[in-house]
Amino acid sequence: MIKIIPSISVIKGKVVRVEKSDFTRITEYDVNPLEVAMKFEDHGIDMIHMVDLEGAKQGHPVNYGVLETIAGYTNLKINFSGGITTDGDISKAYEYGATYITAASIAVARRELFASWIISYGREKISLGADALDRKIAVRGWQKDTDLDIMEHIGYFYERGLKYVKTTDIGKYGDLQGPSYDLYKELLQKYPNLCLMASGGISSIEDIEKLNDLGIYGVVFNKAFYEEKIKLKDLERFTKNYTT
Image (cartoon, rainbow, N blue to C red):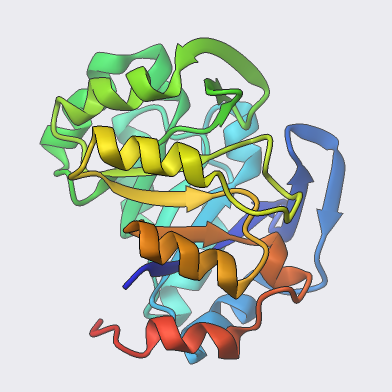
């Protein structure tokens, strides 16, 4: 069964959504990060993806306080991302309550370092963030484009033990027009043991069902929930069998 992983994106301690990579177009939701996390937990969800958007833009995590609060008042597993570039960042994220971390920019800038993290911290604790526009990787909160092909980029780390990857088709992000099924099919065909977390374009329970049928490990979404396209009650069919 597909893993339901709602996303909480944070700027200055507030739950927000940035329109693709445009930090001048920020939607601030009238919810408290802890309160929304507790709602997720109340409906059987056991994992969230927390994105420190300030950290992603600045190149180092900023919103440790939100991470600590959610970790302290819930039993949620937290996959934390946003500007993680050093061993110190990882240690601090774990100290403040992260269960896992996802890193993206450092995997482009210093491939060998990120590959070493898969070994030193364990492949169960480290996820690759591989977000792309037109199949080219973008980093630093999607502020910086690269010429790296997404298939090659993921493949490099897959060959070095990578198990988990979170992939967003930036072109689909926030448009609620459905996810990139073809891209995900291609990734799973080429890297069959990959635990793929799909993100971008998720608009309905039907989208999640289709991703589940593809064999996707997890689905990461935010706008569809905050704008009530997806109801927490409807997600219980996926979460009722969770054992942790």
